[in-house]
Length: 152
Image (cartoon, rainbow, N blue to C red; front, top):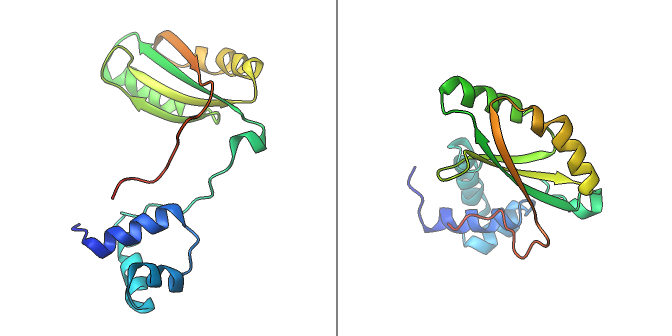
């Protein structure tokens, strides 16, 4: 799908203000309300806009700790990767899982309420993931910058 300047303006606004009214969005991007609505519907139907979500403050819901876990697997065979990927999706504290190039096979982003809670997650879930040869965990001390907005 080809994105023009107006599409990109719409995407920049709704990434930051997902609940903006169509009237306010159309004013910000310089379109009529009906034309803006049609553009947003097209972006949604084409899959450019995947979802609308509420972003929660992890501290305010009792999950202030972010841990990045590097995983090295026993091998790279499809069945090992598939088994690992299927199982990692079942752990609710794992927010992200990325297949990597480099020393780690995967990197996970995990949330926990404390170091003790992470120890529980490690013991009950991470250590039982199939095919894991080695794990290294790094606790984030402070989030300096974080965004969900892609540069469009």
